[in-house]
Length: 390
Image (cartoon, rainbow, N blue to C red; front, side):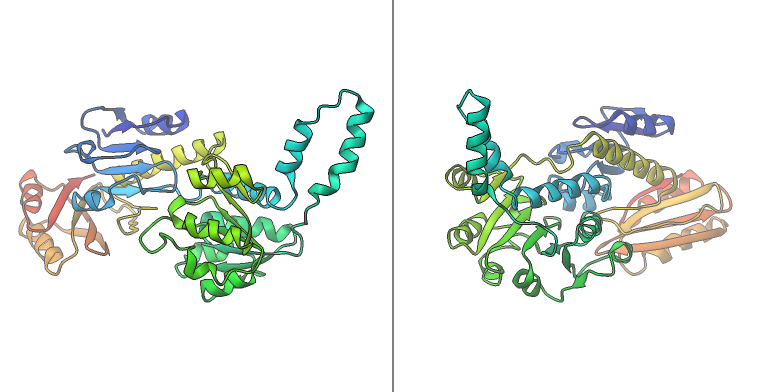
């Protein structure tokens, strides 16, 4: 029997998924944490904790180094909110192109009481809000994961040309891209040839200030920039300078800052909203179910899908006795483990070892159930972080 604890409001469908698989709630020492935006700190890492499941994509509020050092697997749910974010990006494309917000403000403030006067005023002023169509324009998509590839499919059907940039694109994402997508070899090419630019990369050291002065000097004059990913991926000071110089004609973001709020109040070239990308009922349900399924799969079978700090690992069951061993990726560890297993006269039916940077996980299917003594011996080995049987 496995246990869980939740932070934030997790969709009930996710909790039902756990409990249908035999999980019970434990506030003090759970095997799994399910979170959304809660900022985890060291005291949240209870002794029995095996995994943290983030119902969403971003993990910058989770101390990944600490989790890895403790042998705790951190999952996220890429794709669970992809459609919701994609739809908001399309909304951003239209808002930045058609004078919708400006037109709304105008119509909202009409003071005439007579319908004919209102109609005449609207007809007289509508040309002020004339925009441009998306069809035939070029969009540059930075990051071609779940959201970026889905966005590419949708805007292609709207008649847009697409330039994609992602040096780390996965095979699965590549298969999802329309064949019409032009692959950029570098960011400079995308920026200099795109009428619209949409950012879909995680916030890591390599992407912090990705869009800043050095890259903005290459941007196509008058391009529109959309950032619904993470605020720190763009340098707001440099964005404001680009807006003042008309190098960017519009900036759409769901990460308001005092500087951007001020600009938005004074000019029409900044469109702000709360961080709404994943804020749909459907996305919350999808992410909660994905997170629950990941916890269930890992705790019951040791398999890892969509981890941000551990390698992907899958091994079909061959016996009922599976050892799940988390350890540092160093020479000799596997040899010591299998040596101890052999000394107990146990036969290995199947096994797999996968590593990612300094961390590794090994799944070993044994023909017979291992003794407590064997498990304790492996636990005490140098570089072994945790051992369990499932």
